[in-house]
Each structure stands twice: as structure tokens, then as C-alpha cells.
Amino acid sequence: MRVITPMAELEISIGRIVIQDGALVLSNLETDALQTRTILGPQDVRGILAQFMRPRILWHAITCFFRKNPPPETTQEKAEHHATPNPW
Image (tube, rainbow, N blue to C red; front, side):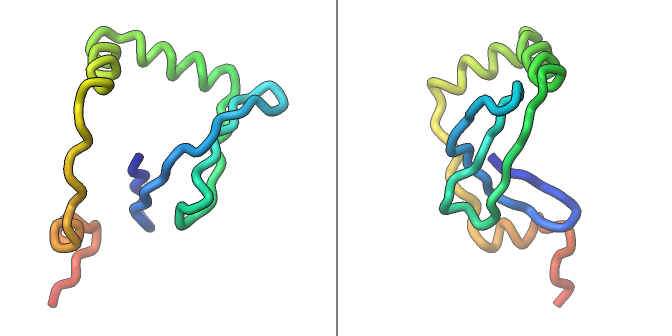
């Protein structure tokens, strides 16, 4: 998954999901550049599941099982879409 912030654009992979203190904890892979954890409480899980139950989103999620990932962007394409492109 791609996480985009004003400071950086990161590629993060979910390595494992565990239950800890009544919350879902998503940790990324050890090989990712930045170690992260996402903690989802019950309210967060309910909100995400409610969004996934919308027909268009649910259909998209189901069809993801049968689609290939798009080819990765080249370095030049990434530079063209960067929030602060080099003016030179």
C-alpha cells in the first residue's frame, strides 16, 4: 500500500495482524524502510467494515482477487508526480 503525507511517500506492506489489548495491530514487514504499527480500536474496525459494505467498494474489493497489480512506476514517473518537483 502507498502512504502519502506532505513530508513523504512510502510503500508499506502489512506483515502481520495481531490482537493486542482488545485492538487490531497491523505491523509492516521488517524489510520496509520505516517500521510502523497501526492500531485499530473497535470503533475504527466498525468504521472500516461499514465503508467496505458499500456496494461499489465491496465489488471493487472482491474483484481485486482477480486483478493483477499495475506495473511499478519508473523513477521518472515518480519524480513527475512528486509534491515538490525539482524545478531544474
